[in-house]
Length: 212
Figure 1 (cartoon, rainbow, N blue to C red):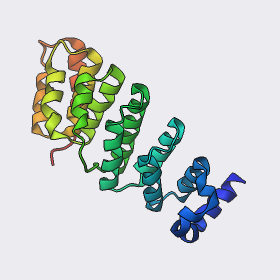
Figure 2 (figure 1 turned 30 degrees about the vertical axis):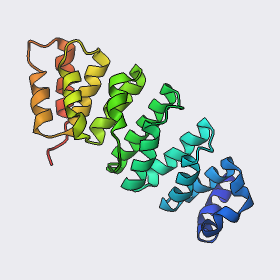
Figure 3 (figure 1 turned 180 degrees about the horizontal axis):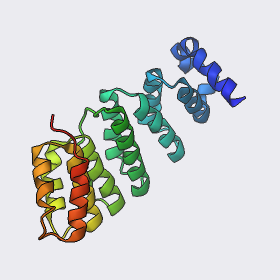
Figure 4 (figure 1 turned 90 degrees about the vertical axis):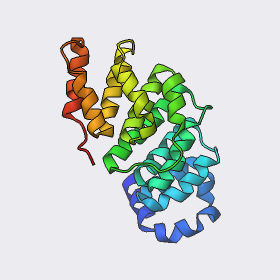
């Protein structure tokens, strides 16, 4: 039954999407999210962005809406959605961390970089609780936010940086790619560094992005 409904919704999308605001079922967010996920295309993004940005969703509904947005939005739409996630202080840190990690995973899979004001990442990296900080570090690398390169290099280089943050920063620099990342990571494989640092730096080097 679910498969038949899912398929029917998708097959008839050209008829109901243009009049979506007039349809009774769309007044129920769970039903609307189900229908828009079934479309499985960019056509779902605009209505999803509307209800997400209006703040009418529960925590679980927000995760579902954003997952579909992440999977189908263009770079500009992604930037708008992610900017909202980065500045959503009403969202508790564990959930905001999950939303950021989901965005990083989707954009990596799609090889797409969000376009927009992502500057809030700097404050999260510097001041957020550990789990949220790690998610932001990963995002800064995956989205190649060059303004944060210095921060990532500092986190990766300083022996006083907590081990999990240091390793995450190395991974972010590898994702960011380029000669600067490669040179720094190579330095961190030096025998004067502790064994864990050398291993993490080596792993990062093995996965480093090719310079553009």
